[in-house]
Image 1 (tube, rainbow, N blue to C red):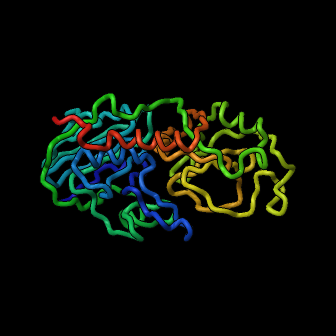
Image 2 (image 1 turned 120 degrees about the horizontal axis):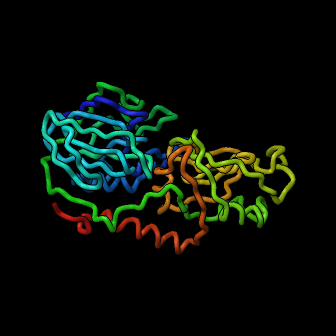
Image 3 (image 1 turned 90 degrees about the vertical axis):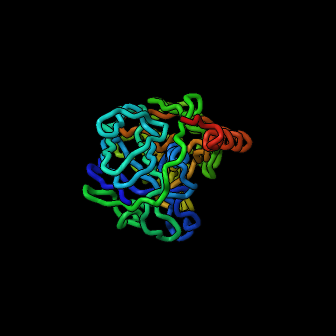
Length: 325
């Protein structure tokens, strides 16, 4: 049983969740889906156990032929015109497919940027260092360590079609053109690195998402920070320089004048200030930022609020909260 790739789109990859955890000390970020919420919802809709692999499709424009009988589900960016055999099908619910059926989607108009395709039984590729997820920068995992190309045949697990499910409208994540991302203060915030005015700028200004953003990092527009110190001391001439240290997934680093959000394939360490960190519950939003179009505002939260937000995000992932079709 296989899924045949007819049009791979821009850079479709095999991912799993939570990815390649526990290797940051060795220089490997976990990879996995840039939007873990849509990814996990797609897997729940087709009855897959957590951890099974599915496809991440940036910007839409994708087609594949099923050589199996099972369920598929597409979750993510709006305006992608999903269809099976040219018959429109909805996002956020499972659809039955049979051998020979062709699933297509057009370029995603948005809001949102990435789509996730899950198939019942999961996508079968070799496990590399504890995960099937493709690390794009390191060519680890996925199918042969690369994005998919036309003609690829992906193995599909043996799973009989189960109950079709739908995510209720009220539980679907809201996508926007102008996003709010919740953050915690980082180790290099004010008063030792940023000034109080710099921090206020970070959490009140509207930031543009740079066209060159990808799975490694989301670049934002340059901004002239004031800085609480004249330079980086032994670390370098610019006050954004620090001695090399660890970076967190979702860390907001400042490289000179450029704030940057680290993605799932980003660098695990470096010599730039970490002024904030996107909370776990908001990381999925980073995966849906549309390069060159969307804007971002940061909102500071505390640890207790971050934990509450994380519990809220988990609620729709319980199949008991979904609609049966």
